[in-house]
Length: 59
Image 1 (cartoon, rainbow, N blue to C red):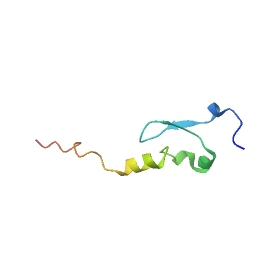
Image 2 (image 1 turned 30 degrees about the vertical axis):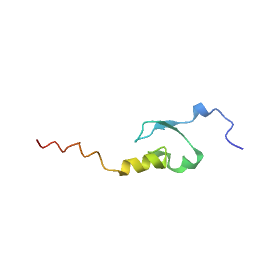
Image 3 (image 1 turned 60 degrees about the vertical axis):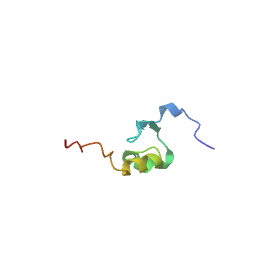
């Protein structure tokens, strides 16, 4: 059985990559302070380099 309490009372924070709100999960209980990304897809996005157009304006 899952959580039966008031889920809106759980802590939440925004994903660093996409900004979507992440709700606290029991699997994150030990390292909630270190959780930054809502999914593996967002974690992969941060690993990709910034777009080449940024900072390459040497005209």
